[in-house]
Image (cartoon, rainbow, N blue to C red; front, side, top):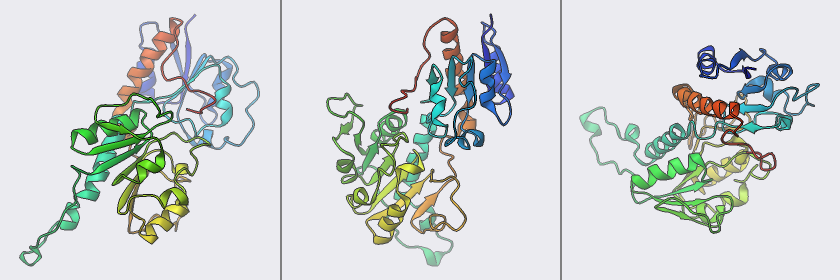
Length: 316
């Protein structure tokens, strides 16, 4: 019997799955109610669409997870989905498929802060003047969360001459990358870093990890870059730290909620660069997700476990 895969992704993507040698049956997930695919599909490929977010505080639909044997999220995080998604026998995520793109975003943000060429640009001879630029080489990049994204950031930063200090869950005794100093606490990292990169998963434990107390410990002049989830940073505390001069600048690709309501102070804050959750550049790397899911579907069809299984307890 062919494996039935219901997918929320694009027709071209689904055609790529259908072309696998073992010929799975690939159908679009029901529009507006993708969870209804549980009645007929073995595998459900999901994305963090508004339909899922609307059910985050609602009870599971009747008979969920139905016939499903596996739910695969196209995104690395699963915090956009209702908790009952994890009632499926197996849930995996798209961890690693966009790590390089997100790491490139981080490096671009650091260079925009350190080498403000737009601010230094001149438009006449009268403007000719010396403008001091900041430095990347020799600075300290602090990475909070050393998963796929954090490692990609660290590799780039080390190659460009920065010192990298990082913290990860279970840092004690952990093996880390060459050139990366593993510290034992988030506070130790933020106290040393010129650029603080937030790349931890969103879980109840990490909600408002960057609160008023932690932001009071940042190195003066530091730059905070959040490419994880908006919930990890207490936005009121962030604004207070920026206004008080404890933190010099923030680059935010994520907020809580998304989008922020009109008139929110982060939109026009002079020390904030806000982008609309684009760091993954997911359309440019859809082929990487297709390759990953194709490998995992093949393994699953052969009775093997796919990669990047989500731990229901940790939530990632």
